[in-house]
Image 1 (cartoon, rainbow, N blue to C red):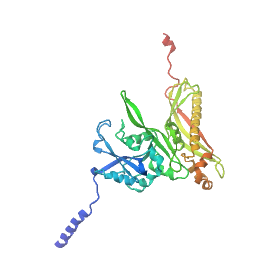
Image 2: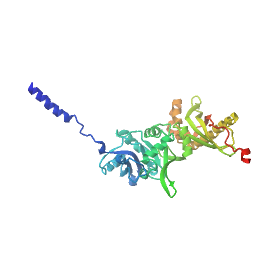
Image 3: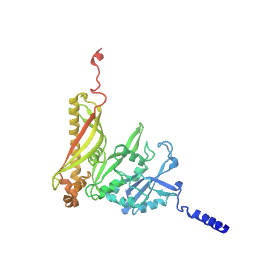
Image 4: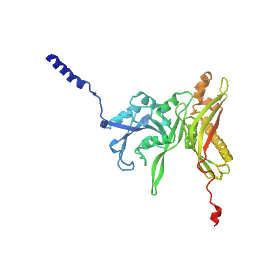
Amino acid sequence: MIRFALLASALLLLAVPAAGCTDFVEPNQLAFVLGSGLDAAEDGLIEVSHQIVIPSRLKGSSSGKVDQYVVMSAKGKNLYDASQKIQLKLSRRLMTSHRILIACGEAFVKQNDIGLLYDKVGRDPTNNLRDTILMIRGGTAKEFLMRRHPMESLPSVAAEKELQINGLRKFSARQLVIDSLAGGTRPLLPFFRIENVELRPDSRTPVSALSGFAVLNEQRRIQGYLDDAEGGRAVWMSGRGSFDAVTLPWKDTKGTLSFRLTHIRRKLRAAGGQAPGRVELTVQAQAYLLENTTALDMAEVDNMIAVQQYLNAEVRKQLQGTMDKVRGWGSDVFGIGEYLHRRYPYWWKTHRTDWDNGFKRLDVAVEAKIHLRSVGAVGAPYKKNEERAWR
């Protein structure tokens, strides 16, 4: 019995160290990557930049002189090769599972297929497909990651928040992969510019800001650019949300009307039996009047009806113009091809191989159904009492 107890105790002591994790890494041995950048390099190489946060320095204001992050870069044959070269420069192990953003320089998107990053973010289990994807126009991703932001601790956090706060939540790596591999839609990529903003009377600070969207073709190359207003309309018509504000001049050009839009969505409908003869894209929203600098008294029902009709007509005109512009490029960023794929499966078999040209020839009409839900707390604009002013 004593021999059995001694043997059991010895086996228990041997089992304790054997059950431990031999490859366990403490948090203070990890380099947390919050943002990554891809840029074109010479000789066909790729330059990868990682924005690595320093947790111990994240306390306090982002305007302090102490650096709260570092940006490490290296060039390689592919993403993994460059990242391994960055790892050789670090005293901690790279950890990308908490990354929130991947930025691509404009030169990288022009010279390379953006699909180069698909395999790395999809195959490597340490990555995720929730990263926000954007492009830096007129600059490099490395420069973007190095720029400080006046309000946020990290520029990658600021850019991701800017997209989220403006209702642009469907521009992740996962969505980019889906749009690229689907036969009936093309990717739409938001781009940022680095602008000099006057934050103080005696100086100007470079700040990255959302400036528009890049339309990609089937080969995932840049087909054209849309400014922020056109891009917002394209996002609305693609069903990915949109900017929630519209300002229009009134008919007599005396004054403007500003609306906040909610419940933004779109619907597609195709007419035709065996083949689509005409596609109708209807955008819907609810509008709230927040500013009125015209002479209209919005307490009157006739004026409310006139404003709603005018709002729908002007929005429809603007959306149709953006639709025709993008359709001229042949890049279906609206997902109309995917809708027709489900609606006319046999017709789609003969058109999917050349959908870019097919989209150019397709008749697409845009309609707007915006309901004016509120005109604000006052009806007529504030006016000076002439009788009291005379006295």
